[in-house]
Image (cartoon, rainbow, N blue to C red; front, side, top):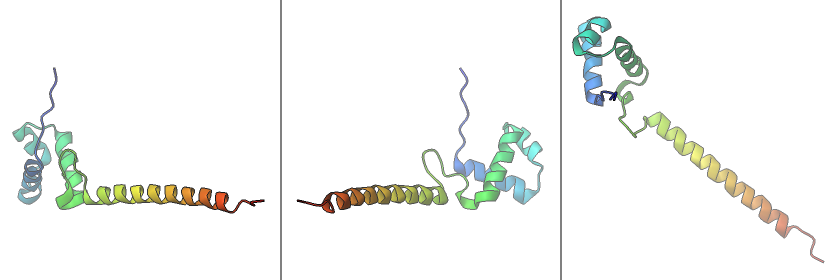
Length: 97
């Protein structure tokens, strides 16, 4: 059975700092720590893109993703509220004779 290794966000940040601050080649660092080279490049890319929010951890979202989720929920709620109000307007505006 294949089990994937899980690395903490702190570990990933330390490895990225090792590459960026010491100037070591990513391929050599990957070989030294026993991580696939592509994995290390992915960590570098994420750190470059998101900085300190790069590795939020399992089940957590980066701040921008969290805000996006909240906005989408608010939009859905407002659309539902709008649909209810339209139905209510249709009911109350019917001609009662």
